[in-house]
Image (tube, rainbow, N blue to C red; front, side, top):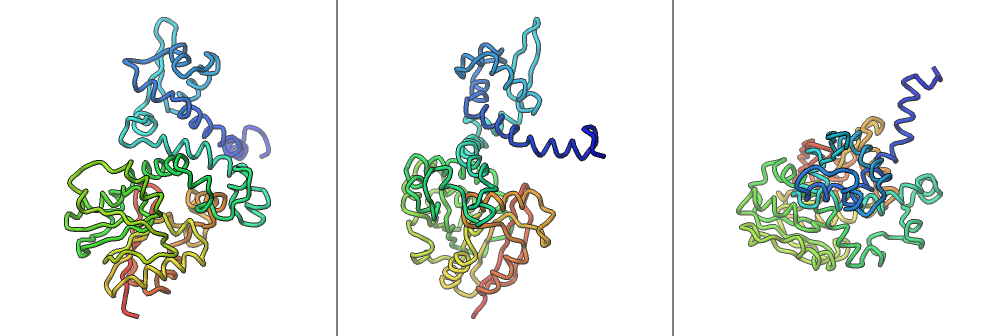
Amino acid sequence: MGSSGDDGYRLLNEYANGFMVSQVLFAACELGVFDLLAEAPGPLDVAAVAAGVEASSHGTELLLDTCVSLKLLKVETRAGKAFYENTELSSAYLTRVSPTSQCSLLKYLGRTSYGCWGHLADAFAIREGRNQHHRVLGKKVDDLFQDAYYRSPETQLRFMQAMHGVAKLTARQVATAFDLSRFSSACDVGGCTGALARELAREYPGLQVTVFDLPDVVELAVHFQPAGPQAAQIHFAAGDFFRDPLPSAELYVLCRILHDWSDDKVHKLLSKVAESCKPGAGLLLVETLLDEKKREAQGSLIQSLNMLVQTEGRERSRGEYQCLLELHGFHQVQVVHLEGVLDAMLATRVAP
């Protein structure tokens, strides 16, 4: 033990250098490497890629070869010269033209999240339990969602694009996790671009869905509304879900909402939902669940730290959510683990 050849050291080295891997991914996406290769009629050599992304040949070659090692690109050699093209992974998720593109999310992670994580050990993150946007932005931020920087149209649209890309990948899983056919109306609270609402409408043709979100979000949501047969089933309503009455519905949906907030605000929001519900109404909750001991689910634990550095919330376990739901009159809790990192919970409002 203790030598550079043992498994412990290799694991430590993998953890310590993990940020470099993510930066390779962020840089290649930011430079447009994957888009350039997607638009090319065939594989490109280093000189062509360097010219296309306006970077040095030396730096481009190092970046491309590292992407090959990460299985983000593939390479073939012709007459001693290397030619690069996208892998299936990068074609599916790292090009803007792909319907499953995650480019906006990666740019958000690289520009904003990465900076916040750089201050994880600082006083306001671990020592005082506060988010780090004030450090990234160079000013004090008490509430991320009320800060002018995040409410500007450009940055808000960028964040919405990131969330839309994620939602498109998970919306069908969420919509089909349970049989929701008994409901004729739904309210997607904090539904952002309406990606989940469209999938709910597609799965249940008789379901009327209201997307309820802040006025500036509703205003920008027009950028994400393609015409389709479900358009007549979906309506947008503007308001603040902590302050304003919620639209009437038989099913309320909270998809990746509660993990943003402190326990006090979670109680406040669930109380508002409960007040809007009649007995028999449903609440569909979608989050990333921690294991009950909060020691084993590595991805969920890391995501919980992410909530600390970027919001005021955290991830919670199934037991914690069930206690919260039951406290506000929601029982008969069912849980389904979706593919990837999300879990869905369906509960029914009972008479007080």
